[in-house]
Image (cartoon, rainbow over the protein chains, first blue to last red):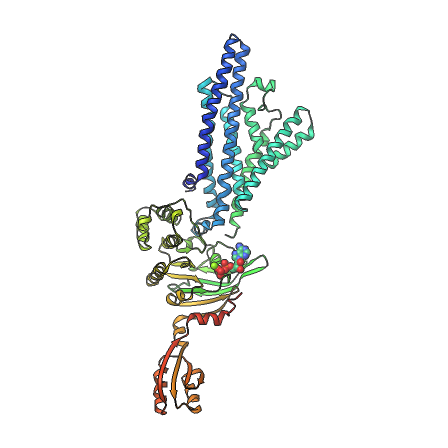
Length: 275
Length: 305
Ligand SMILES: Nc1ncnc2c1ncn2[C@@H]1O[C@H](COP(=O)(O)OP(=O)(O)O)[C@@H](O)[C@H]1O
Ligand SMILES: [Mg+2]
């Protein structure tokens, strides 16, 4: 039901339009850059070095596309759930629903499942579009693609679930502010950690880890890029997507636990709330 | 065995420092149409929300249809039209009812037929496929009412059902309440519109500052508070004091006497007595104290603020 609800709403429509637009621009952009580099490679006589550059360029562009897809999915997740409980509590819509013979926890779980499904589809569309676009134009496929995409999905789910928890306690606006604020913090923390590891600055790395613990979204993205990054760029460390300080498996497990805790919190807060 | 539809024992809700409902004890029988009357902010909505499990009581206990508050199975037999509601605007009227029916555990053909019947009853059949965002307040109120009746409830809560309705809509609500009464449904009607309550309810409770100040049956209102005004000449002090046999609060003002009688039967008896005493009667009239007068008397002119 929430699924249908979401589809009727403008957020999803806006998300889809944005997504399709993005894919179109991305494909054209990729084509242009790729053609350019291919020509250069051909001019260089197809040497191994130039082929390598071509490959690395594809990898880089793929990650850039995925990065944008990730951001769109994360934003979609946050917007979907920011308004759902808060908005329905505020408008009183929730009253007739909770006065039905349902568990309140089922109301929250139902929404979560619907959003998780929706986000999955959305990500599949965007990321799938990016991957397909790169593949059909250059034949390039990143390594560990599935693992990377799952991590990105986890990131979007985290954002959505955390927003749902906030939404059960606060207004939609406050929820939006909180989740995007934390997301931004984690993003900056991630960079501090990266730069810290270049200069071997332990404090900076620890600050980064601390922000990841606070909100592990960015850490998931970095792990995802680490998985999908070709060995060469990792060694050369030459693009912004090269991950220097790699979040380990413990961080991933932590993110999963974080997600479950946020969901439990959402349910609990909603159960104890006067409507 | 009859189970009380609503039974509460010292139900109380405190928001911060402020007690919205102060230890409310009330019993409503099945099949009764019960009016819950009080000024704005008296705690009427809060009381209903506690009964429906939307708001957690701070203390006290309560039962709906024999089951303790918060029992989900009972909610399948209860209907609710909230006060300030906005429904999912992107749904059409039909989808909205379908959704709420499904939430109640109804399905298939039975649900579809019920929806058809209710849409027809509230006069919205032509708008079945229209999105709720295009509806007027009155139309929303009607869909809301249909929603509250989907499951043939044994108990319906209507929180200010006629606010926002035009006279035709109000009349529709009244008729539906009458039908519910005939079907034996218990209706709990929150309102500050006295005439509505007066016409539809069997019993009313007056509530003020979160407390019930008075509960009375409306039949008894009709009897107990009939006021008789007599215009006559030849009334003596002795005759006036004799009339105390039939009524109370006797006031004489020149040729006009007013008194309150317990039963309408008293009126012909008084007339006969006065004629026997040689009093010349020019007119006798009876008026009922309206619920409104009683409301003001009970709750106070300040409206309980
Ligand atoms: N969630 C809330 N938080 C604080 N005060 C509330 C809340 N809900 C209601 N109140 C207060 O409780 C009182 C009773 O409200 P309500 O039950 O809506 O009255 P009524 O329905 O009789 O008009 C009001 O004074 C209102 O301000
Ligand atoms: Mg109210």
